[in-house]
Amino acid sequence: MKKIFLTFCLILAGVACFIHHAYHPTNLPDHDSKYQNFLRWIHYTHLKLKRDSFCNLHIPMSKIPIDVIIPVIEKDLDTLSLTIESLRANVLQPIKNIYLIAPESEKLRQIAKEKQCVFILEDTVLPVFSKKTKRKGWLKQQYIKLNADTVGACEHFLVIDADTILIRPQVFVLPGKEVLNILHDYWLSRKKMVKVALGYKKLHNVDFTSHHMLMSKLKLKELKHHLETLHKKSWQDALDSIDIPDGSFSEYELYGNFVAQRFADEVELVLGANTLFPRNGLANIRNASEYLSCKYKSMTMHNFLTIEGMTG
Image 1 (cartoon, rainbow, N blue to C red):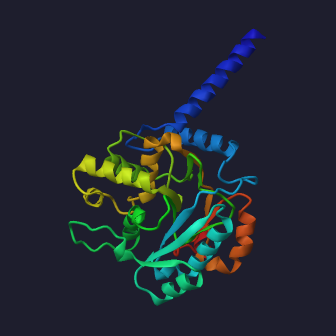
Image 2 (cartoon, rainbow, N blue to C red):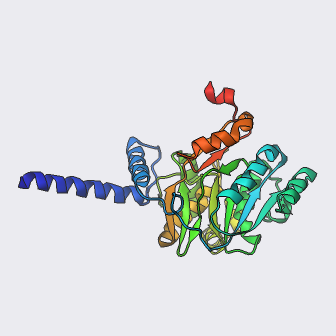
Image 3 (tube, rainbow, N blue to C red):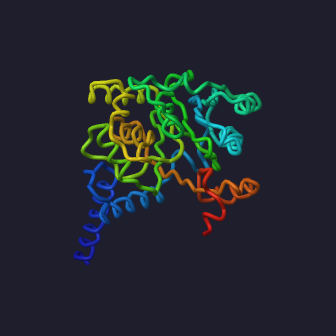
């Protein structure tokens, strides 16, 4: 009986050690391995079993006000109104303002007026680079998000993609704690970009690209200061000078990895529980979101996703 008890204790101690190891940054491998996958599985499984302090049936309203930043272009006109409506329906804390950051567009200005949002021209938020290369589309929006601390009055702001909607009530910042949503996806190339940018040897073995992220102006300024100190140039030029493969730049990964280590006691990692939804299925979005909210917290509707493409 004593041997059985000791064996059981050793097993519990081993599990606890693995959970502790999985939760903490590890050396970034040259290639993603089965061991890294195993650590992620432990981390995700533990988070599934753990109570989510930011999204569950009994969370109270948070009194901490936030702003919302939505970088958007006209290709997301079909989803933008749904994104705004989902924020007002599901964010359980005061939203001071919702800012639409976009190129000049009468259609987007009209939505901003109808939905009582603030329209801001994107070039006024985009940081100034030493090299005058014209940055477009996705990359441009990522730099805008990293410079969004120049917008709004609240210390905390939620950045959300214009093709993403929240489908379950949730909060993003509580007294002394901010949420960091993580996904099951994992892109080693994005981690390598972050490793070079931040100069960290160890990184969290999870994916922070959850299509929306709560940011703090103070923490974002600390990130920029870190980049400028490390690379001896402005933060935007530092990132611009890194040799980054196509599709491997991620503002969410950069901020998430920095904050999760520098401010570990002030953030909590939780499952983002995001799912993809076909853009040409928008006619059924309300029924689908109600059904999917039993399992997921948000839905993303990339413009290239179709019912035919997702069903094969």
